[in-house]
Amino acid sequence: MPEGHTIHRAARDQRPMLVGRTIAVASPQGRFAAGAASLDGRVCTAIEAYGKHLLYDFEGEGSLHVHLGLFGSFRSTAQPAPAPRGAVRARLTSSTHVVDIVGPNRCEVLDPAGKAALLARIGPDVLRPDADRTRAMDRIRASRTAVGLLLMDQSVIAGIGNIYRTELLWRAGIHPSSPGTRLSPAQVEHLWSDACDLLARGVELGAIVTIDDATPGEGRYRERVNIFDQPACPRCTRRIRMLVIGGRKAYACETCQKRPRRVTRTA
DNA sequence: GCCGAATGCCCAA
DNA sequence: TGGGCCTTCGGCG
Image (cartoon, rainbow, N blue to C red):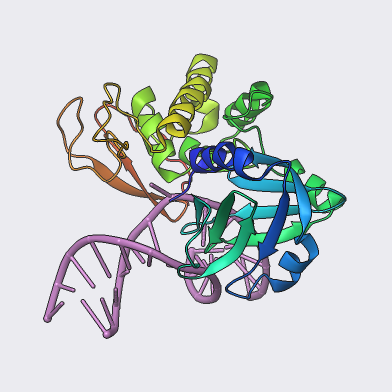
């Protein structure tokens, strides 16, 4: 399931399969029929990830915008491709490869204005080298909202999801309900740079790995985390507490991550 | 075989 | 703040 690293990995994997080629676009499931027809037979000119959004540009006007949501996924294979399995919203076919977009939350064609509007509401992306880190850090430090909420707010900082949020705060020794205003410049800078490191590693490994001594399993990496949905803190061995922040499950070690004295809004 | 949960986000009230 | 949407998978019977 996708956080920002999944989308950037998909962009990297799919570029050599699709960019610079004529793409047949179809909607096996049928729910993207009109959009598919408008893109079918055109040349894909670029694939770019912004936070959790993936944008495919096509010659002429129009971009394909995909957001996977909670359960969506990409399946890419070399030709010859198998018949679509399950609910394939869109299938992109080049002379050599096939990319299926399965169960996305969003799959739509945007005109240039729509694309600009989308990009305008996505905050600095920790996986993009051109990201304005100062803007993200300033917004966090200026807000009295719980940092556990701010890290999930894609207009503040883009790419982080529920697992990375939990793990970043544990690694930094910061309680999720600490207000942004309570954090030091050094703490916020550390959160940004650790996010960059962890998500970049996630792109490389194709999995969320937030423990330090990660070793590959057989072939593919498996997800490896410290406290997300874990019983005990690997640092102090105490029980991990489950919290609900913004309607989502979050986790914290309340020994290693001191709860702020004044209670913060976490709803 | 059914039910619930899941790494996301939008909208209405 | 709660419900809706998208799909798959594991646990339970």
